[in-house]
Image 1 (cartoon, rainbow over the protein chains, first blue to last red):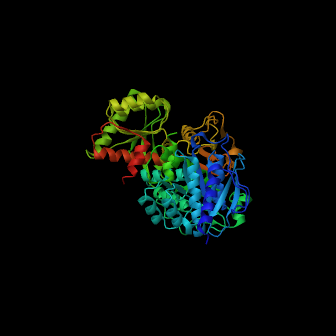
Image 2 (cartoon, each protein chain N blue to C red; image 1 turned 180 degrees about the vertical axis):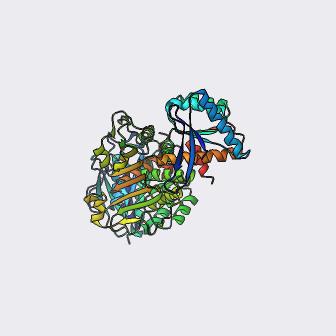
Image 3 (cartoon, chains in turn blue, green; image 1 turned 60 degrees about the vertical axis):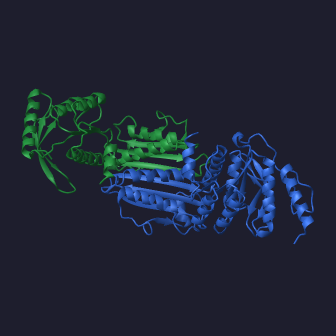
Length: 340
Length: 268
């Protein structure tokens, strides 16, 4: 391995880079291209000047989309972020197509070898933003990394928004709660979908069997690679069954479309075939004279990316105002939106 | 059903047979014209006879689907006769109606929309809008509705739903007077999904919320053909009122809404 003086020099170079935004030229470092931090520009959201968002999981599509959403909302990205353990360290440019805002991010693999580099980078970043500054992470990595990343965030006292599904959720929640670290952990980052789901849950709880005698039909379409129906859909069906008392089997009665022809006939655009979530629920009265229909159709990832950025901003506000260090959900994010 | 009931002042007294097509159940009802003092005395005697017939444990409740011009005079008669009722007729002076009922300590269900499920849906949206206003900030609203040609305006229900959706979307641009796409010709209504036999009595509504970039769409429809949903809701309201009276709680003289009927359904 490297000997001590070289390691020290390495660390110094990193500190220098991240605190001044200036890359010393060349070869002792592993950087592959000139890397410049964006200077504070007009277009940054004034309430979040002190915030840097570390988007972990790039260049994965969901993480990248989330990073773009942050830029779109005027947030500043951290110039370093974690990537998969087997990915070569590299520097990417994230660019939001709508606003053309962009940022350069150095991706550091999440493996033992790079762990020190990552920690130093984070320290350097924190030093750079000063005592009033704040770093929050977004995690769109991989189910197999959920728990180890959770532990790393706890170790670094780094508040985060966990967009990655899977892993052991109970362990994740316990780890975070025991450490009294603030985080947003939500299975669905699509804020509007969560709002709709909550509304139906409330309705079912307040007026169960209001739609007694109505029968339920449900059709959904997702990309071919998604074998099962979404958790969201199952939850919505649950509420509708409480409302109608219909005998409907979630395992067998949902009409699942997984071929291009059916999906397109259902309204999915060709360029969204590989990433979409379309749902239609219909409640029909016993005599057929009354019909209620609810649709939620999502193409692509933007709704989740935007919800994730909203969650980051929420977490920043909570921490700035001295809020509790605990786990927050999308419902909290929604509720707080009401106070704006 | 009660074997006697009130009909319009200009209708000849007659006896009709009411039949439910689904179950085949039927009942004979003598219709007594309302209006003149003589007629109302006959109605009162008949009601007294009916009450004597069902005995002290019996209960008579009225349903009113008459005419806006009769709402208040009927309300006063029900108050005089201490006859609990469900007011399905719209119009009239609602404030006066409420006052008459409250002053007489009478119980009644008075609701603008007897379609129980529609009211539930409306309440859910109102709750959502008040809990998470602007949750759909940046989304654009579009509304299309179809009713029978004789209905000039959009329904009060639709306007209330739109208010909730606008609170959710923060859409300042939507104008309820101009931006609702109202279908009032047969061709458009049929294309919208209305069946031919329902052209003369239906209420179809579709509301769409679309994200600014077009990648997310929420759609809500409530399509009613004919009158049954209101009739069923009315019957539900009668049963609700009966249960309330039987419980004999201290709420003597309370006016209930469809929301109360819905809430109480939860306790069954």
